[in-house]
Length: 221
Image 1 (spheres, rainbow, N blue to C red):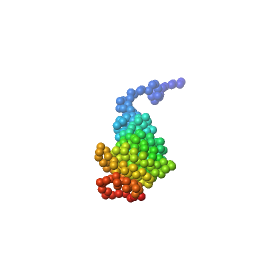
Image 2 (image 1 turned 60 degrees about the horizontal axis):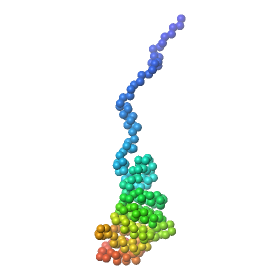
Image 3 (image 1 turned 180 degrees about the vertical axis):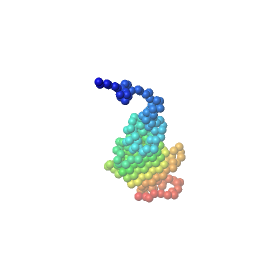
């Protein structure tokens, strides 16, 4: 006789499994793991963080992350200074200048488009405090920087207090005449100029600075 009997050890594999309702703690932990903390940061805090980055990072990296970061990265208040060499195309640098009307410091080096760039700076950067031009040509055809472009820097950028020209060619005498007579609301504006000066330009500057006392001057070329 054959007798069949169900083994009690197989009973655990039979029948539907009991479902346990997830507790609130596990749901909260899962929600926190999936939460995007960076995306949730307020605009003001992101803008503060972005203000410590240079323009290249903002333009080439940060603004490409998402729409929110692009909007904040391109806010003018995030751009405090601009520094560019010849690796930045003229149209890109021009866009940077247009996007940053509140920049205080501007520096370019090893470029052959100084006339175009300085024209844009004088037009858009009214809060500029210092400018450095190093080893630049006015254009690809002319080494000297245009007189009208230089003069616009002085007449439009009222807060400009430091000018540093290194390895550049300046033929303008009017620039040095305006340099000596810069005023704002009737008051002379303090300005530090470091750069090339020809004997003729020096005489123009000295004649225009009637009553001034020179305690230090740069080398005349």
